Image 1 (cartoon, rainbow, N blue to C red):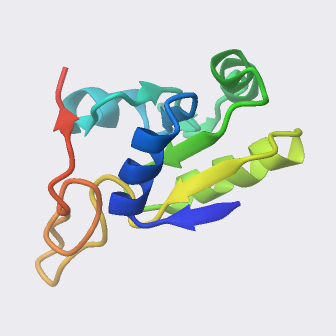
Image 2: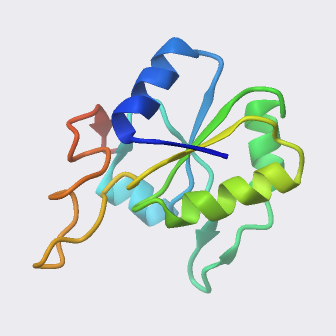
Length: 128
């Protein structure tokens, strides 16, 4: 798995239109916090028990047809690493993780999007 800063991931996605951009956060995060423009939602873990989504692999295979590059993003970069390792284990040859995720690390006041991450870098995002 390769790791990309948010701006690098954005540039990669622009130059590789065949790549699949997967936001692997929970459905609530995806819908209510917002998500990168162009990202599809396939939760790695979701409530109420926060178990690994048993359909993650199948949905990812359907989205990427196994041969397309996959770029994963989560809130801060931890879940996307786990999801990326899982995809690699099951044969995905080209997996990228977005460092610092969508919201980035917490600051001293426990707020996100103030230090790093997709939103902090001013990259396109939307809320549905």
